Image (cartoon, rainbow, N blue to C red):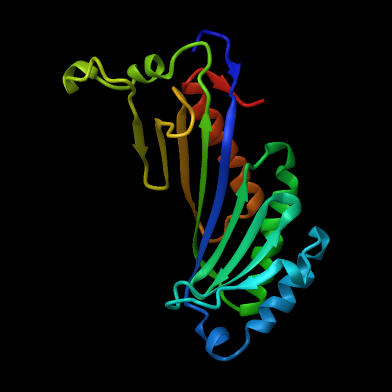
Length: 220
């Protein structure tokens, strides 16, 4: 892309990490051993000021898929959820300038949980989603280069969307439902069970840069 890129005006971002155990840890739920998980993670997460008031559980779970313990990390707008089938970690409005803190938090949570329950992960998946406000060029004009509007009979469409799928990665660029004339971008990547948080972060950062570059933007 020959033109100089502008910094993307990213809004309302979210990040989600999911990992599935090779086998469900049902013995911890039906063996009344949830306390072992709470004790281990409470101690491991103490550097992020996670206290007892930041730990909760779903008391009205309708099935085992809904049963979970939640550890909130207010300082990073993050949460770690432990379920029978695996682990989920979320961050609201993630900021790459704080990446080392997120990497440390996530890897600490993963290592502590696997050691405590004696169970390895089968797979890991990350999802990064965010809205981008329009820049100097309308997004419709930028996205039209990726579709054949004439073949679709949609030359007068207000906006276009693009989805690209690989065996371990997908990205979606769609119309934002929040910001007028903006777009919503979602990046989903699957990692092997052995991949560490630092390596995942580097890959995700590159994915975001690449997709934004195709729209004429760069990260700050």
